[in-house]
Amino acid sequence: MPYVAETIARLKKSAPAEVEFYQAVEEVLTSLRPLLDKNPKYRKHGIIERIVEPERQISFRVSWIDDKGHVQVNKGYRVQYSSAIGPYKGGIRFHPTVYSGIIKFLGFEQIFKNSLTGLAIGGGKGGSDFDPKGKSDNEIMRFCQSFMTELYRHIGATVDVPAGDIGVGGREIGYMYGQYKRLTGSYEGVLTGKKLNWGGSLARTEATGYGAVYFAQNMLEGRGDSLNGKTCVVSGAGNVAIYTIQKLHQLGAKAVTCSDSRGFIYHEKGIDLALLKQLKEVEGASLEKYLETHKDAKYTPVSAYPAGRNAVWSVPCQAAFPSATQNELNEADAKELLKNGCICISEGANMPSTPEAVEAFLKAKICYGPGKAANAGGVATSQLEMAQNGSMQQWTFEEVDAKLKDIMKNIYIRASEAAAEFGEPTNLVLGANIAGFRKVADAMIDQGVV
Ligand code: NDP
Image (cartoon, rainbow, N blue to C red; front, top):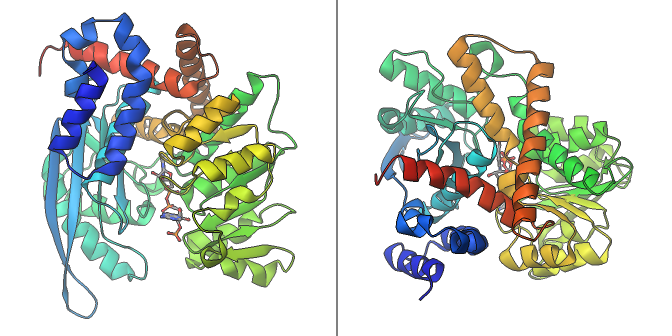
């Protein structure tokens, strides 16, 4: 059996039923084939066998008391995937769908994403099946404190530096940071995504969404085009989606949709960002409430989506920004986007397109920015937060944003150059995977069999 297939088969046997993890591994390893064929050293040093195996996986019980005095128990995870080029770095996700396969897929992707940024950060990811929805502030605090009471012994400013992800924003980072400090007595940059008055970085909140838009702009400029005047479809209504919409509007594009787990808004005039922020960042309300202010917008509940489809992708657009969650865009959705004239996809979310959808985009040779390249602005700015914490400085918004823009441009260049080197100049999946992998793999060879 060939090298890549052999590794995937062994993985499926040793980690049964972790489907999202297999999906991520198959995508990466398949696109590495031309590199592996050309460079037998990676096989000789067992790089593929080693890189698919996390250096460490921590799984723990998180017990806490709800407001009614009842005991609740959730599962907690931290996967420390690779420290070949820096301390483990990657977010924490709180969502009921979290299980080991989700955390491992995210951690695995994170290795290559972090490498692509050009910064010294390894790959990791964590989370819990805890659902923050409908919980009081006190319940969130008690849960976060209990989660950190186990996690604190495994992390540190030069060891592993978690950040936010789905369900984890400034409030949760705050409660976890407070508990870390209480347990260790140390005020250090052990988490990123902190609020500004206690060690956070300006532009971190905006970074993932802004970065996905900068990446789209780079891809389009590479073809003599730009975002200016384009109609854009965005999924999600959380951190990434909100700041994607903000940057699109700043650059003269028009975002006409946003979505959450219950449905989506289509507003032909362009999404009212101030209202969206009020609904999602302040009230935590359903998107349906958007209609109370804008009668000319349309709300479609998930129950009205055609079977097996995510209706947001049926809205005609020239550029699309999947910014909600994994596998939210399938082959039929991809074909509909292409049929309606979409020429650019920039993934704010992690692995939002199914393998068949990715195939359709690559075949059409449109601008397609895979998540590990397009959404790397978030983790890159987290690293900038670490740098500010380490030097006890705070940079201005403009300084951080300029660095972010530069990093996104360099990621685009690295991925495009690697794609061209292997004879597929428009294939940024191949380019991003090869460019990200090569740096980590060479570091692993230098550091010996560990
Ligand atoms: P948030 O929790 O802020 O927002 C997530 C949004 O996606 C919400 O609108 C949520 O709707 C929606 N959503 C989540 N799960 C589903 C689902 N199963 N079906 C439909 N809608 C869903 O998360 P973020 O914006 O931070 O993260 C979004 C994506 O971006 C994730 O894939 C994350 O891994 C990725 N990412 C985030 C980074 C960051 O810096 N935050 C960095 C890089 C990638 P509802 O509220 O109704 O659940």
